[in-house]
Image 1 (cartoon, rainbow, N blue to C red):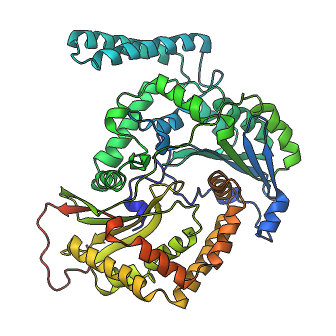
Image 2 (cartoon, one colour):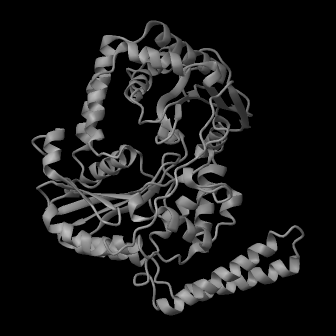
Amino acid sequence: MSLAALAPSRSRAWSRGSRRWVALAGVCLSLWLSAAPAAAQSLADFEKRLTVHILPNGWTFLILERPGAPVFSFATQADVGAAQDPTGRTGIAHMFEHMAFKGTPVIGTTDYAKEKVAIDELEAAYQAYERARSAVQPDKAQVERLHKAFQEKNTAAEQYVRKNEFDELVAREGGVGLNAGTSADSTVYFYAMPVNKFELFAYLESERFWRPVFREFYKERDVVVEERRMRTESQPTGRLFERFSDAAYSAHPYRQPPVGYRSDLDRLTITDARAFFDQYYGPSNLVTAIVGGLKAKEIIPIIDKYFGRIPSRPDPLSLRTVEPPQIGEVSITLRDPSQPIYIEGYHKPASTSMDEPSYDALSDILSRGRTSRLYRSLVRDKKLAVAVQGASGFPGVKYPNLWVVIGVPARGITNDAVRDAIRAEFQKIQTDGVTDEELTRFKTRTKADLLRSLNSNGGLAEQLVSYHTLFGDWRELFRYVERVDKVTQADIKRVATALFKESNRTVARIESTTAPAPTGSGAGAGR
């Protein structure tokens, strides 16, 4: 069981409808989308084939030529996520992600001139209803009357909608993997198409980030509310992780769930979404990577033609709030009829820190696979847990974040027993460090992971936009491996000593309200 399996969509919010959750590692497209394996995978080789093209309006394009199949994948990353959700409007970054698939004045409508009027009337009706129900002493009759008027306007606006036309157009023209995801740090949009449809891609993507139409907004808001109910409110781990984040952060918006708080979702408006789009979706806040069997010199004029139409906007302001140093352990306990679960989190620097490879080494040695220390100790040898996993980068990577470990106790085993065993492994690294073999294995696996990620056009496009947005230079994807090579045993021991402190720790646990299984012979063998 992995951290991603236990965490309820914190790395990326669940996307709309049939879209599937996408892990941070990137999307795995069908094999036919992968270009022929490159003979060389070095930074120097990529520099020869990658063109950085920045439009006058500030939109950055990374174009990587990969001779092979006549297909390309792209990823567009908006440098905005749940951390930028305004107070009282949590979930709006995720909500706009949904709106980006609703079409434009041309796509998704039967008559946009009439639809625009209908949407404006709908929003006016909703704002009137919202003011009435938010009054200090609401007039029940007035609230009911205004809610009915809002519903009538909603029905009137829907008559002009061509449902799912954007999705169907992409699929009809050979596009696959259409999806998006919202994390604490960013929002990423992606799919793949045949090379001969590149101009259509340029038209579609420029239109939806230039002139999105907020049709079916309140219907889609209900979809997001249901996502929250299913993924968070109805799941013990969902409820636990939401409270864990809230306990770990006293000030920084990383405490906010990407899907949003229920009370905020119930009051999000089209006006909110438009303001959010205007503030954060200016061209200079977007990076697009295009990877596949095409030539930069041939597609740059097309990029200029379509994406260059979009007016520039001021860069959004950076977040002001900085999480203060934690001064004491924080602990929360949920009592639930589910099985027990134990979580510890420790504050660490942002992933742009030069120590990030050392934290990754710590995660690898402690919890990656069946050779890891935590697995061997808690699962294999002592049979205290059925699963244990540690990783950094929760709930995001752009700002100082958390190194988190999760343990699922075996039957009849308490959270306290799992806690003590986990902390004993932390103490061993703080005291004795790690072995040469463990460090070598981490470095070898990290390089192998990079090489595997380069084989998929889609995965590589996501990696490129992620590193370019985070560091300002896509080359950091390769330089990270160089930093990994420099990690020493002393570095790992140093970061472990600084990290695993009681005053730096947040604990969250589920204590089962059902009767525990009897301990004894075979009690810890599993479920």
